[in-house]
Image 1 (cartoon, rainbow, N blue to C red):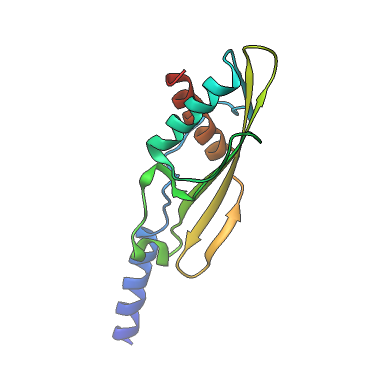
Image 2: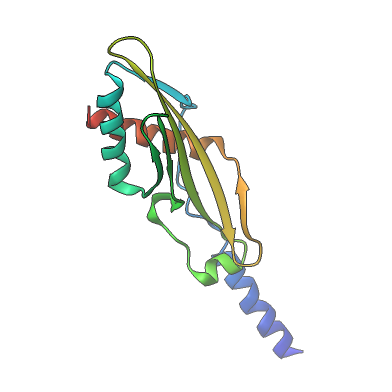
Length: 150
């Protein structure tokens, strides 16, 4: 019986340690729009997009003529939880961008950013999930990087 309580206690402690995620500290005051307009031409914004994405993401698909870029999945904030943490209710979130760049009028362009989130747990494995706060945060960070390259 003592052995049972000891094992139960260890499992309980480990599960409490693993209840976090790599997105628990992300806070966004308001939703960030999925589309942002830039006062720059298509080619200039395309170059800024490639430069901004190259800072953190790996580009999977890049079709300039169609204005489409898709990135590989990457861990949010580069924070991967340990195997023990994800074993007991903890989650590691990864994301991928699908970006559509469109020429508006002469000298302006529109960037539409779709964020796909994937939640990973050791027992549940992977599943797509929606979290508007995290998606907004990721769009906001990308928009800032794009702007810094214009």
